[in-house]
View 1 (cartoon, rainbow, N blue to C red):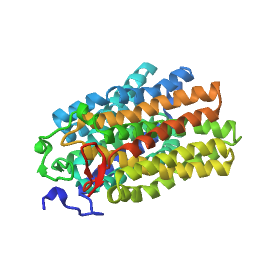
View 2 (cartoon, rainbow, N blue to C red):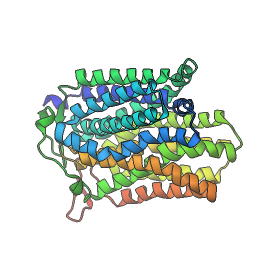
View 3 (spheres, one colour):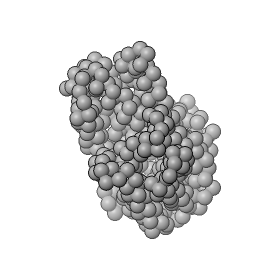
Length: 416
């Protein structure tokens, strides 16, 4: 058996643990900065809109530079782009902490978004290549757990650091990214990759091992890849968009509760998601990507609908718990589908998949916020539920891509 298929921990290659540690370092650093970013911007004498633009600049530049990051992965390989992306975010964060004007802060946060796009695309692309095809779901669950745990723990440290200085979180963020860059260079420099597609397996050493590639235009012809894109759009819209922006306002305006209730609901959702990630990965690998995506889409849609139907604190907590469970499946299975569809370095295909989530994260708060202002919260959550449900519909129509399944000429799963 090739070394790329060795599974020293939890049945997975050691590179999965390294990438999970890197994702944790990145997420905890981002979580440290997020609570103070707009406050730091206000120190330069700007208004609320300008302070919000500093937050948006990071996400907008991630979205704008995603495909360019994918092309770099195709040309240079995952590890070089991964280390470079982390380095860009580290340096830009350090300089942001030293910024002497609002313009400097805005530009540096935008540069950080470019580096973040490079990191996310290359890290996911590498993850999908270092694991055997029948382990992609479980590998992705570990990778996602790093982001989740880092994102939950980071804000607590950020709040404490803000009491010392609004600049301190940026320096700590740069330090966590420097650690992540060092880990990448040291432990992933000789990571071995597998080119697995359609159930076949071939292993090789280094970035140049896989010569077969799947261009984006070819991936877009796959109904499974199309479904993964729509599911990821809905996930970004609901999970990274309205859950962070509109839900706190809903709790204040409709439930009449404060930040404590918001924090409790987000904690309940995060705990549910963390507990469900590993089981979701096992379901995606052993039962199938399609049923995992379908169950996640239905569960997430119901969770959003419950916010409208059960406008009470217990209903809110139930909704957050259900969405956390659904988010685990939606964070694991679509990524496994991308790995099933893409051969070799699929930088642009992985980038488009990540950009779908970024598009949802940018557009969700804007559209849902406008609906809440002009119509009602019910419309805002209802439209969001419909977008998530569209991913479930496409999942129901896609062929199964899990290794071992056979697909007929019409693209229908016909069994093993």
